[in-house]
Length: 459
Image (cartoon, rainbow, N blue to C red):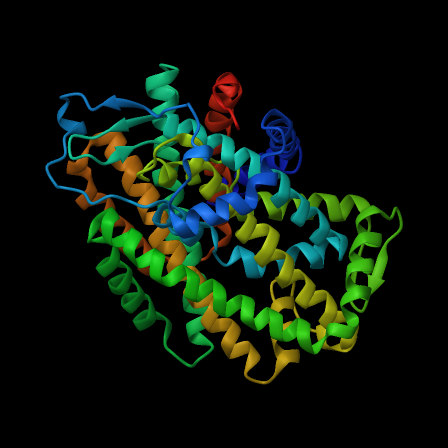
C-alpha cells in the first residue's frame, strides 16, 4: 500500500505540478479570448441566477440541441421529474465546490507560496470563469432529453453523442463515480468529523450521524438534492462571508498593506516576508494556481453535469449562470479568506506562530474573538456537508449514464458507507487517489472542449 501511495504521489506530482497546470491555464486564457472575455457578462449571469428570466432583446438564436432518449433499458426513467431552475443548478454546483478547500486550501497556498499565492489563486478564478462557461455551454447544447422531461448532460454525454468517443465517455463517467466516493465521501467526511471532535463529540457516532443525515437528503434523488442545496448554500456562504467581513473590518487599517504585500510577493524574485509567512514569484505562482484550479474545478467538467439539468431556453443563459459559481467560489470566498489571513498576519504577526499550513484561517478567526475558531468549525462542517450532497448528485448522474437507474441503490448505499469510513480512515492515500482520478476528469473534458471549441459562442 505504501508503495502504491508513493507511486501515485510521483505520478500526481509530475502531472499536476507541471503539464496539467500549464494546459488548464492555457485553456482558461484561450476561452477568455474565444468568448471575447465572457467575464464581462458576470453581472448579467448573477441577474439571471436571481430572476431566472431574460428579456426578448437578450435572447440568442442558438437553441439547445436535445437528443431524445433511446429505448435502451439503462436510459429509461419512470419517475416524473420537476423542472430544475438555473439557480438550483448553480447552488448544486456551489454545494460541491464550496468545500473545505476554500478554507484549508487558501491557508496552505499562503503558507507554502507566501502572500503572493493569493493573487494567482484569484487570477485563476477570474480566467477560469471562461472555461466554466465553455464546458457548461457544450453540456447544454448537446444534452439528452429524458422521457420524463428532465435532462441528462455533462462531458460524458458530449463525448458519447457528439464525438462518438464511447470508451472515453465511460472513462470520464467512471472517474466521476470514483472521485465522488473518494474525494467527497472520504475527505469531506473526515473534515466534518475533525471539526465535530473539536466540540468534544466522539468521532464514530459523528460518522454514523453524518452518514444518516446525508443519506436522508440523497435518498430523495436529484430533486431533493437541488431543493436542499438552494436552501443551504446561501446561508452557509453568507455566514462565512459575514465572518470574513468582520475580520477585515477589525483589521481595516491593515487592508491596503495586505494588498500591497500580496502584489509584491506575487512578482518578486526575492522572498517577501510577513511574520512566519514568506514567498517569492515561483512559489506563489505554483501554489496559487494549483489551489485555485482545485478549488473551483473549472476544466474538470463537473459543473456542466449540474448545468445540463436546468430548464433553460438556450445554452448561453445557463452557461452564464453556472459561470458565476467560479466567481463566488474562488474570486470572492477564497479572496476574502486570504485577505483575512494576510491582514491578521500584519495586525498580529506573532499569532500565526505555531499554526500549521492548514490552520492559518483558524488563526485569523481567533484574532476576531475567542468564539472565532468554534464559528469557523461550524462553517467547515456546513461546507463539508454541502460538498457531500453536491458530489453525490454528480456521482448519481454518472452512475445512471454507465449502468442505468438500476445502479442508483447500490451507488447510494456505497456512498453512505464511505461517508462513515471517511471519518476514521487516514487521508493521505485517499488524497493521492483523488488527484489521480482528477486526471481522468480533466483530460477527457479538455479533449472535448478542444475539438468542439467552435460550437461555443457568446453573443
